[in-house]
Image (cartoon, rainbow, N blue to C red; front, top):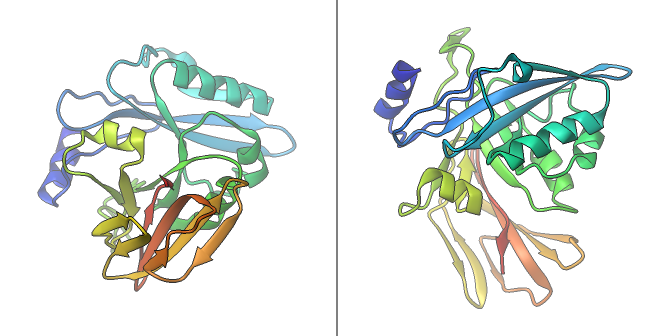
Length: 253
């Protein structure tokens, strides 16, 4: 794990969260603590939720307890109970690679109390923007862009350094993630977000801005600068640079 963290550092990453399956990685340096829990749900099909957790080192879950290694459930309520337990112990909870066919969107809509989803996952090479848009219709959620790399190289293609987040310089990583003060990216850049009489996104890419009103109704603007809508209460932006993208979290007006 230390070698992997050092590899990312050499490629310009300031911090990493190593969240291996069923193995809790804890460190005292700038890296984040976390784990990825496998939640198997047998109903008519074998649904398979992966819950990605991040914490500040204060979680009281005993990660050496095999109770938490692989979890076999028979109802969605049990998955919800585990999310609630993780949250009660100081963890942030994200649903990993949500476009996996074993994680139906209708189940994600029923689950509550999780912090966000992986809007991009490198191993699945999946863009979950459409899932994210649907989930935002009735809740606030964060988005992450991550490497889910089970090998450094697959079929000659480098699997690392493809998904990441960019945080504000003066914030600690976990503080930035909790507050949504970052953007997720696969290589596109967002340089500045300006809000006064206008919403303006400074970026070399093509910009789309989505504004949400009090009823969570969304309006899409294909422009990097729009007049501040009177009915808007929050917005988010997506930057496109070729096949690369960057996503902001919801920003309150």
